[in-house]
Amino acid sequence: MTPEYALELRGVRKTYRGFALKDVSFTLPRGHIGGLIGPNGSGKTTIIKLIMNLIRREAGEIRVFGLDNREAEIEVKSRIGFVYDVPGFWDDQSLDSQRRALGAFYPRWSDDTFHRLAREFALPLDKKYKALSHGAKSKFALAMALSHGADLLIMDEPTAGLDPVFRRELLKRLSALLQDEGKSILFSTHITSDLERVADVITFIRSGEIVFSLTRDDLLDGWAIVRGEEQVIRELDPRLLRGMRHRAFGVEALVSDGGAARRVVGSRAVVDRVTLDEVMVLMAGDHAHAA
Amino acid sequence: MLRNALRKDLLLNARHLWGILPWFVWVAYAMSEPDAGRITAVGAAFVGALMATTIAAREDKLRTSATLASLPVRRRTLVQARYVVSYVVGAVTYLVVAAMAAVLPWSVQRAAELFEVKTLLLTATLASTAIALLMPVVLRFGLLGVLVFLGAFQVVGVVLFVAADFFAARSGARLFFGTIERGVVALYSGLGQAGPIVETALIVSLSVWLSFRLSVFLAERRDL
Image 1 (cartoon, helix red, strand yellow):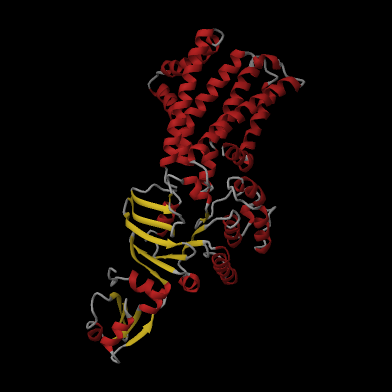
Image 2 (cartoon, helix red, strand yellow):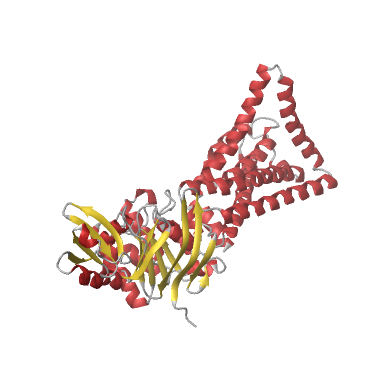
């Protein structure tokens, strides 16, 4: 039976001095793009490292296509294309040497795909890695991740350091991978406009805890920003309130049910569609409310 | 998979391993000195093995450890490759020195002497000791581990000499270094007889096996 999820995390825990990932649970259905967002230091990279078994979890379960990521480590990793936030490659070696050395580990590695991507990304294969610009380094990491027929792409800040034109191109390519080849993708980013373009599922993490994991439509169509005087905002059901901040004109509140908020405030306040940026700011702020 | 890991180590860290080249300049000079050739060859294998052991430190510095750990290969296999590469580099270094002994016109060292069983066993013992001691430290602590490990030896040496000067205990320092020297000489003499050969082989094998188990244990538990 084909597993329903590309990725499942259940009750995952990891503790560092001064930071803990607390019972993290979320899923990514097969053939979907998942976005992981949250403030700096919230635990996004820790989650990605746990999935890749780069760090050891203390509790919980991580399954990739139904397989435990530790027990079936080799099979799991051969099905994942991974792009690290700071790509680590051998500075004094040419891109082609690294392709030969690292590609050999993957049973489904395709030199044809790699060379096609290298041409599209204008990568100088005979040049040493250290001679590349930051953007070219990211492109090389992407080409490596996309050349071994991975079923799941995991990317930590893949668009950081890329120019807007290539960023848009990359997002288009990711969407195409999803549509044409049924791949699944999880990526973390600070650039929320990227997620609004392509993500199906958005998971928000704050201080090591998952605050929500919702479909993009449920989030962007269901949630809303209410702007008005504080006494009007206070009439809203506190269970709907997810974050609040004081502005010059009054108060701005993030609510998880725009329709319900509209019915309560009527014309006394403005109820707007929410953007991911606003969700990030309001949920990460001092007046954030637990989901 | 071990083959891929070995290939990767040799292909991507070749430049690091070329760091051994300056050693050969000294070897070339030493070949003209009577009695220096043999110890130079043993030392070359020791240094070669040590150099290969520090590949993990270089990869740590380049942040490639995480890239390696994300490949579909067990960390145990990567550790295995490190041990094999260290022995291979040690052996190749030794062979190069032997070739220099045979080829260099001013060499007073006969190449054939370098292939006496006693010399080969001493080389294997010293190189194995270097690998067994350093590898777990490098795999667990990376570049910092190498610096602390080698730095600690330097500090111990300096402290011994300073102590000798301050407390007029020069005989203590002499005793310490003399013991090491006599130990190596005794080992070399002993390696001509069956009993000590078996004992040494057993101790070295056990040490390398324990070192390997410790390295795997540490590498598998290391957060990257």
